[in-house]
Length: 409
Image 1 (cartoon, rainbow, N blue to C red):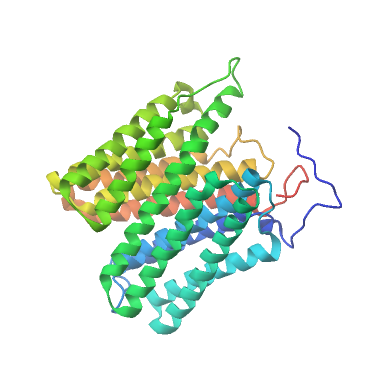
Image 2 (image 1 turned 135 degrees about the vertical axis):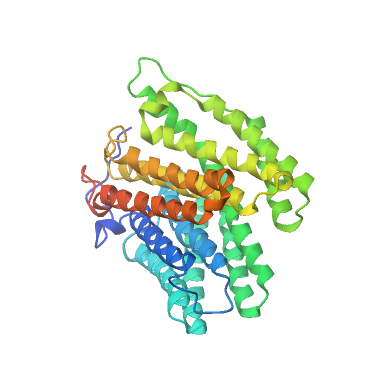
């Protein structure tokens, strides 16, 4: 179907990067992914320290990876995808700039807390920024969804609202001195992000595989899906999330995590097509889902093999947050700027391989040779930074330019 825009009705923004949410948030999020990991590397190796006694450096790192980086990419995607789902124009131009400005204010506040001291001042800026960013983003999505009565999207909307509450818990923990709230806020944020990734991934990954492989094939490619698997995945993941956050009973965590891994593993088998390995924008999505399945296997066996819980957490974060977001950004940045998704930049294989190396160094190698733990973590951090530097070189110019077909977007 051709997309036609009337010259008189076409919206405009002062800069191409403010045309739609994916542009500014993909650029900002990827820049921040480099900066915040560099700061964390300095802290982790002892070359810098947190200038506050009220925030655990591990929680600082986790907060900024989730509520900083991951939320930027999720909001950028939703402020673009909801326009497609509902047909309603999402924030652009100066309105989009205000939402991004709140996000940026929060990131500056959290970075300054780590480096500059004056905790109360910087955290006040951060909470104003984060709440403005998350509330305005949620409002834009909710308004569009309700306007066209697409109530099937309310699952994603509810997760955005709960993510806002999870972030507020982190701030409440700092100002009240109750560290336990911070842990709940972090893990709630991680699992809600994973819930969004599983929900969106269930929609787009099989669709992308079908479209991508049918493009240069004589036959239409169809993959297998099942509403039964969808229900089992949602139910078992909810049980796992609640158990790991609020009731860490080993049997309950192991059984629920094993079911999540099994259900999504079966789902992944139904999506598999041998030719995906010829297309980096497809195999990266497949590998991201495979990494999440392996992560839940680790959660299932961790209580009985006694390795660190953080290894399973990082496995889930690197596959579900790292690989999945980089893969989605690489595809969305092409499709929504009028470029061919079938001829991505030649660097994309290296971008995704670097994230795979980050997973191997941070998750697999500590299980194999724990005595070199510091080395493995530094290598994982370096691979993460290199991945986003290469993404920036490849995609920032695309995201900053107008569409080649002259349309707005």
